[in-house]
Image 1 (cartoon, rainbow, N blue to C red):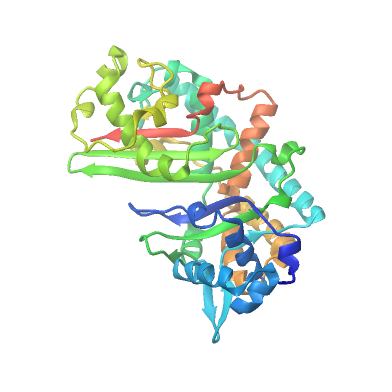
Image 2 (tube, rainbow, N blue to C red):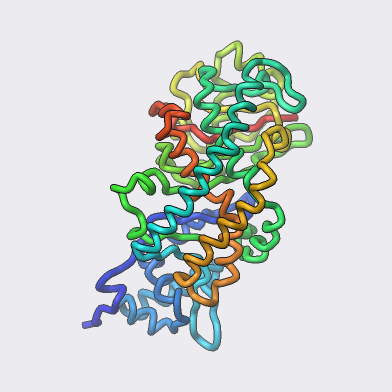
Length: 396
């Protein structure tokens, strides 16, 4: 009988899988590739040290034939590299922290999220209130944005998330991150970051809501005179349990088609008269799979914008100049704390990953948590949780 190895006795499990990079029109999510626990344990077996297939099988305590095809699959799809003659080395980033490191890490992110809440979020509230007064600003008019039930709190959740994930980004580090992208078979280019289940504590308010895939932009069915672009940012503040592949590739097209053919709301239809006449190929997915996003046939439960993403992002307040130094301070603190927790062969990836810390999901989700705990943001209803931090952009 095969003797169980270390991972056979105590297997690991990922609590979160996210990707950082560029998706393609035929994008297949990293979660799809890495969802099986045997895959996750193979990746962990080859994470700190390059191993042969027999060595990986020994670590898992299984027969070689159960491992070989999975290793070839991971290599073919860019999650493991074959080095030397027959050794395999994992190239995804795995957060694997002991309790003391995790607690220090959380405190660092909490400290900088609080600074964002104090020095940048007030600018966002001024922005939101100014455009909500129905006064035209130089770049954006609230009349061109559909907000479900005109709920300003719901709009604030989404705009704050969008601004923190995009405007807190320090552009000069983008190239360093792009150098770490791996080209995939589906045309996407990205790297993967996974978190071990032991690093999530359900009793800890700091981590309770913070499983996240971050933000995803998708261009759907472009035509010469029309663009349908979607943006969504997923955390456990929402209650979306629909498959991420469906959200990314199909949901917005199906919602568009459903709105076009079924919504009988004069105010909504008047806003989008003309845009909703564009002919689209109907998706094969059934209406029932996204009816929760439309609680009433005459109520669209999602922010819809006639303003392009570029125009909306340009209109958002810029970060204070001091935030560029703030990003570097955060990077130095978090990198110096966590560097030793990752294998040496991934040091370039670790450095690039943490250079983007100020706009990372670790900050964004804590900003939302801080604002919610201090009653600056009001709790979301169950219906709102289905589409919070989602925008459908429809523009000529």
